[in-house]
Length: 107
Image (tube, rainbow, N blue to C red):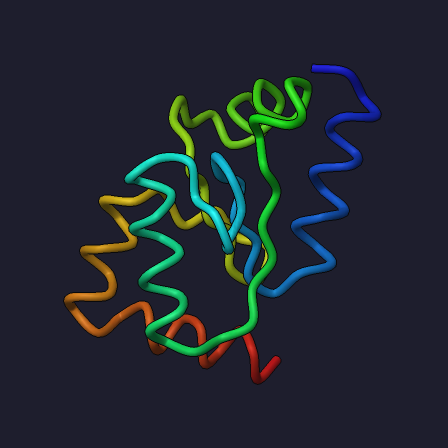
């Protein structure tokens, strides 16, 4: 991965308490898995930012290398990689995601 791509990814993750790398954006998700993540975060009513990996091939490949995770979407909370759609659903159903988000937004 190019160093400037890694630096861009790192800056986005550090600047935003909740950062989602996804296909599409929060207003128009372009795949079901990305939509799942958006729906969960919208239900929680928390502020979050998204990056459309379809619009930026360097970020699309770079984020997979950055996290060592092969799929999109990817969610970061408070600078920490959380996972994708399945993990978000599981954390939400267990009530753990709400706690993680509250801690992140309070810090």
